[in-house]
Length: 125
Image (cartoon, rainbow, N blue to C red; front, side):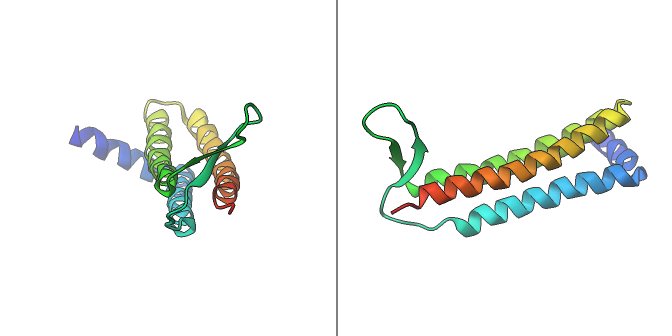
């Protein structure tokens, strides 16, 4: 297992553009985690965490620590997308690895937009 990780790391480091894309995924994911962690604020009040247009109640409430799940999502995003990109490159799908890395970066931008909206709704008072 250790040999597999080392050989994969050597192959990825040997391809500079792919390494830069994986570093962008990692740094963007860390930036996302920091962004979410900074925008969380503890409160005794329940936060609006879900909206639906059906029923009497449009905003459903939950405790503030529910929003820590976004931090967990950021951690899973980094591990899954960087690992899958490296795996695609290792098994010989170089162009697919590049495409997946670029789509991961686009997904990261969408994650920022969506999380900003959720945090904006959650802290309505």
